[in-house]
Amino acid sequence: MANPKSWGQSFEFLIRSEDGVKLFKQYLKSQFCDENLDFWLAVENFRDNVDDDELAKQAGIIVKTYVSKKATRAVNLKAPNRERTVKAVEANAHRNVFDDAQKEIYDFMQRDPYVRFLKSEQYANACA
Image 1 (spheres, one colour):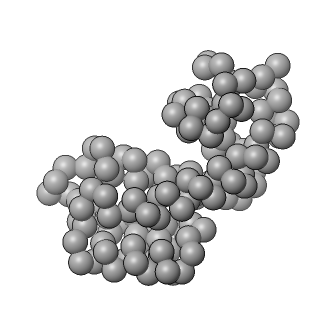
Image 2 (cartoon, rainbow, N blue to C red):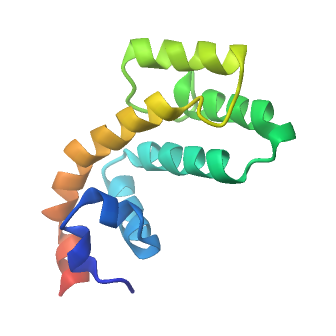
Image 3 (cartoon, rainbow, N blue to C red):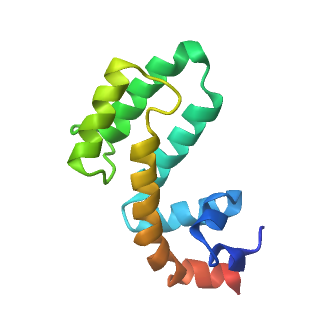
């Protein structure tokens, strides 16, 4: 396992660690907000691994699952960003179409759940 104490130095260290993401996801599930991390990871995968021919299809799945007002696992996006992202995907799904939405979710996770995670029993046990 990566050094869990390094995850306390920055959210970036946590989110870039496979073990850190696993533990953080467990924590988020216990807080009923793991959809935010799942969205962030889905966008990372979309940007890096989706074939050009599949961009529109995968973008549509991400919108339907996480972004639209009726999404099955809606993330904590502000309404203007949500609407802008949906329209952008409908108009032209490209690799960076989710950048603003992903940044908003990253900032949210860093500002709220990450801070609580660092005070959690899960994180304390990982550092012990």
